[in-house]
Image (cartoon, rainbow, N blue to C red; front, side, top):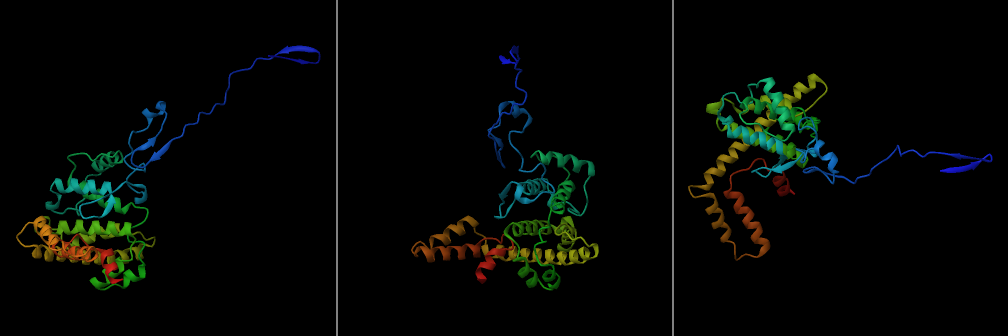
Length: 297
């Protein structure tokens, strides 16, 4: 390129561009990771993210993958995986489960694998139970922290505790319901694992809430222990009553038989009656905070 200046013709070379920006439109899906990523970047990014967060510990449930368990509670997948592995390996019948701590080095290894979305096989059951407690303990906010602490401290009976936990948001209520049912499953094998409702409530209570003041935290943890104990005992009673009402016939047969009895009822009444009958014949699935609240309204 040439230009005329001061009556002299000079030449100027144009170099290659030095500040180039390539724009690519990429979206992020919490289940499938990055979508539309340029091929040159794909080897550096996992095809499918285990969760929307880089870790499954110490993060809010809002940034984690959730799923419904067999009881209808919406909980993080990591909890369902740990629970399933604990049950498959006979953890419910291991003495001191959730009281005895696992090996620290094994726990660190399992944590790394869980962050990749993998639950290793052959994990010690005490390590699995310890990770479940650690998951609750490391939450940014305890699942019971949304409850008015004054009301919790004033509770003296099972009825008081049931009433106060109805104030929980849906996500926290599902996590509490999941925890109580887990505790109830363990207590059903109390004669083998030596874990009573009080023992389990004692080890779970410190992981359910966070308070800055140590003295207040200790007093509150004692009250949370009573809360967990009462709710677990309530769940066990409901299970026993439900199982005695089912009788010797198969659950599915009983359910079908009752539903067919209401074929001639109009749609509105039919739905109400079927729900009522199913509630009578199905085993209790837990605390049913929201169902009880709806009935009161």
